[in-house]
Image 1 (cartoon, rainbow, N blue to C red):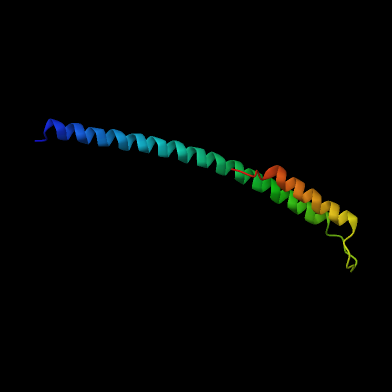
Image 2: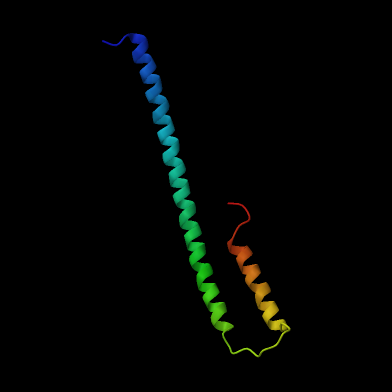
Amino acid sequence: MLERSEVYSLNKVLTEEQRERTLTKKANIALNDKYCVLREKHNKLEKQYHLLLESNSQPSNTKSTPNPSTSQKCENVIILMRMFIPLTL
């Protein structure tokens, strides 16, 4: 038979483990939510990338200097990426 102090000690450990489990579950839910948001942003970026790729798939002349419209399109891609990819997560 367990002594009262042992029961108290075991109850204390159990309570702490239950608290940790609850915190872990909450963290897991938060991470799943962030994952879903990131997956959605990724899908949007993929669509935008493919649209941009299709819009630039015209035959190009073999020039060694970049033309201004291509440079502008690259700037637009960078701006779009910054809109969808936060600096800190």
